Length: 265
Image 1 (cartoon, helix red, strand yellow):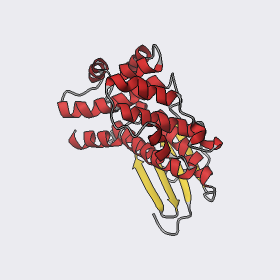
Image 2 (tube, helix red, strand yellow):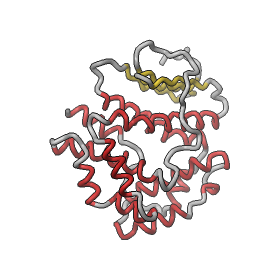
Image 3 (cartoon, helix red, strand yellow):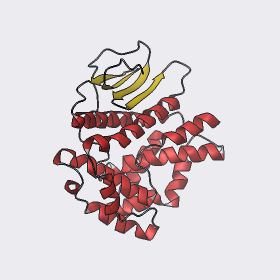
Image 4 (cartoon, one colour):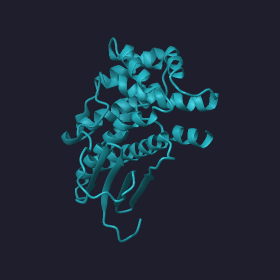
């Protein structure tokens, strides 16, 4: 990105009926940047499943999410972690090669976790999604584009979409954008991630028998101790992400798994 480009955060997408374009230029207020990044995260997460339909049975995952969403949160999380659920996910990916299948199961699991837990806890940020075309598209072609220039932080994540573009490649880019926003939102929102980690006792990976204790910690999480009132909702999402990390479950589709799948396919 040229040094002459003004500081900004921008997201645009133009593909089929999906048309959205917005740009934040008021970047002196760090909270505004955090809110904009949160909307970008919500937007890309809502679209990822749509671009995975060629490699995983998304409708089947939705049905499985409905099946698992019974009982309390502890029971649901334990079900998400169970070998039986892993086998069902394996049946929902369109791949026979063992290595590629494992990569897609990782992706399908993240979609399932988000869909299932959305019925029990906030998995998205409070801002909602970007849904309007507020600025001119930077390209006439179909595309997804995310750019940032703010001080030393410069990002360009872009994909021009044509007839030869695998839809899973779009999903990969969306997942990569989500990973970037997930890393940066706490920086601009001043969310105490170290404190959240300490809340869960610095645990790394727990046994199945310890899942109830982790969920209990999450249910007693007080976001006001880790973020300002403006960003308490965001801190709660980060607490859920950390609780799931301890249990070895993903809240976010792993861009690396999709990248490896595309490399090996």
